[in-house]
Amino acid sequence: MKFITYLAEREKVGILLGDRVVPLHGNISMKVNSMLDLIENTTASLLDEIESITVDNTPTSFPLKSVKLLAPIPYPRRNVICLGKNYEDHAREIKMTKISDTGIPSAPIYFTKMASPAIAHGDDIRFSCQNTCQVDYEVELAVVIAKEGTNIKADHAEEYIWGYTIVNDVTARDLQGKHKQWYKGKSLDTFCPMGPALVHKKAVPFPVELDIQCSINGELRQNSNTRNMIFDIAYIISDLSKGMTLKPGDIICTGTPSGVGMGFEPHKFLNDGDIVECYIEGIGRLVNKAAVI
Image (cartoon, rainbow, N blue to C red; front, side):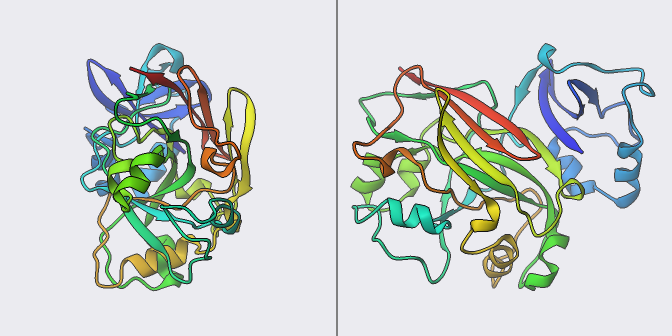
């Protein structure tokens, strides 16, 4: 099941059936005001009710192209949690820089980024060269938490997952190096593209092994599979939750594979008009354009 957030006078939630959208409001017994509402109130019976919906048995559906997509969770309640250097090939490609050393992490590297709001498929990644001239892309599988949990055992981690989406962890590399801490360079306005859909975990076998790619203007730059993470999703959820409560709607970005702009010689940072296409198998394509303002 693919769920989307879209704009139709106000923010609404729907399910994506092929190229058509079925609004949840009016099609299920529960009133859904936002994706966070849905996540917090999901039950097995509600999922069964949603799964029974088809384009043919609902009075209301419309083409996806007729609506303005928003990020699945446009305004996360807490900062997006991210992992650095969680693919070995990426850890090696960035070499020794102001940002990192060449080591393969022996424990997860956590940081957060602000998304206020996260931008959607089709929105521009906007930046000014007065602030940064080294804007980079990072395709990542994002895990959305279903319920509150602390000290979660790894073999119970899937119980705490609601679903998965794509996040492009856009990064100002010059700011990341300048501040010697990653928060500022990761958190500029528009630097958290998310979507296009939030896929419920029932549609994704666990452990998660999905192809993950990023192309710039049609040139394939990143190409891997989530099975290549150094720390897998079960480990991440268990480790993060030790003494730190995870909450419904929390978003965890699980790292990016090799092929980022900083990894090339010379570097291949984003330029005005570049089309960034992030793809994850079973979720879809998140496409955004870089726009220098």
